[in-house]
Amino acid sequence: MPMFVDTSPPGQCIFCRLVAGEIPAERVYEDALTIAFMDIGQVNPGHVLVASKRHAATLFDLTFDEAGALMQTAQRVAFAVREAFDPPGLTLLQANGKEGDQTVFHCHMHVVPRHGDDGIALSWPRKDPPAAVLAEYAEKLRAVMKPG
Image 1: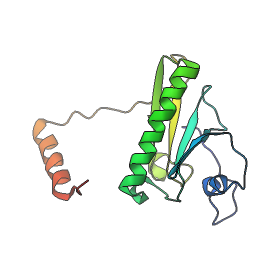
Image 2: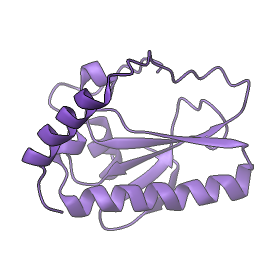
Image 3: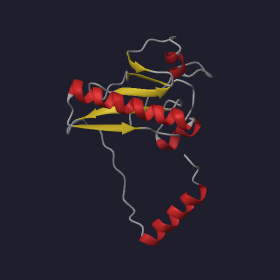
């Protein structure tokens, strides 16, 4: 993912400033919990960011309602991107933490129209663990899963 450097003063969040109207943005959609706006670093025409209105650094800081609203808005934007730009593919990307490649620490999702030669690469090495290991991982998750 391309590196973006947030030039906001320390203690200020660029997306919170955008939500508050302190900095300009081409807004595409907003509701009570989310805002969608054009990414200034357009990868492909129609690249939109969908963010929570309330400051939440990562997905883990959102309420279940906010997380649901984020995905609903991303889907609404995805339909609009498909209609307006007719890309052959579309990627939704939501990163958390520095190691997850998050560059703006306000929960958001990229809605990126995709084309075969657009230069975006989303790949990782497959590990292919045996079924018993997958069963162990699943049990660990079930043991701590919070009810929806």
